[in-house]
Length: 400
Image (cartoon, rainbow, N blue to C red; front, side, top):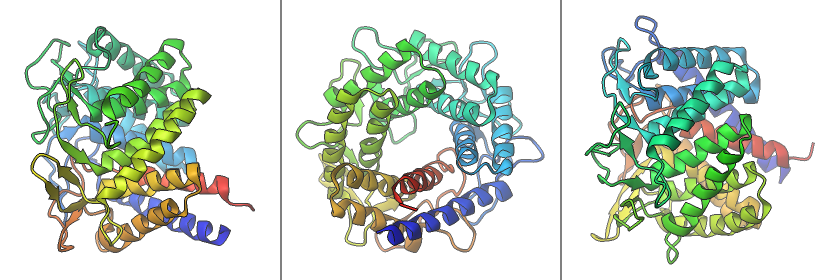
């Protein structure tokens, strides 16, 4: 078994390096600062494309986490660049918080306070503090956390409102993207708040923060996870009434391990056992979305009985971790084999062996989707995190 794990680890270490090299060589905007906002599938750079805060924060997290794993000073240098650009251009100096986008020169563009974006800034800043011990990064993360609690937290019903205006007032359009439902609360934002708060807790063991993490876990257990199917419900009104009928297989398997990681971070043993049981149920439910080639389909619309027959890059990355996590909890070899199959699928269909990085995804007939290589949503986060997480887990398993 050690030989299998050693091979798996070596392949993931090599792929992590490939991903990071791609971003180092292609994404840095040396003319206008920060990183390019868009690069297409053929590696054509769109120099005047808007720059997204989520992309910048995910670059910050990725290169900070990569440095924390490898101690490669080149990775820390990129993280420092991402931090400087976040601080200088995305942080709202007047009202606090993070802008959704800036233009290619770094001027505010979409100034809406999307809570999802605030969460990723906290996530990246916390990881950067671990690598750099930069006190300003820690202070910014805590400031963003406090503003989320002050303006987005629903004191009556629990959870967090999706978005607010630049000056933290109610707004009509709460959507993250055009494909999303315009509802007060979403699974996606709450999942990444949990991820962000858990990472913040690593550098700031605040009692109230711990309470918010516990509350978020119970929001998943009591509202977001469907008790009959163990799939995640995607959208809700402010009172947690269900407002969607779509299964997102990638989010299912991502939540399966992030929930457990959060409970472990706060060292709550009784909650951790409860979450582990649920994690296995979610991972089992996710197998509904697997194709025979090992790939994970994108999503399924229950109302229309319609499967979106695309296999995007990020659900495959999350499947690599989520199924491995299922194996670690249960010892069930089927979970381990599915993690390996997910990685083999990525190697065969998702890696761009010519131009670098991962394709957005493939269609049912295995043709590559013509989508961005770098963009508002296409970031070095899911794939690098998958590699980093598995490398760490395998190192803890192998007996040297």
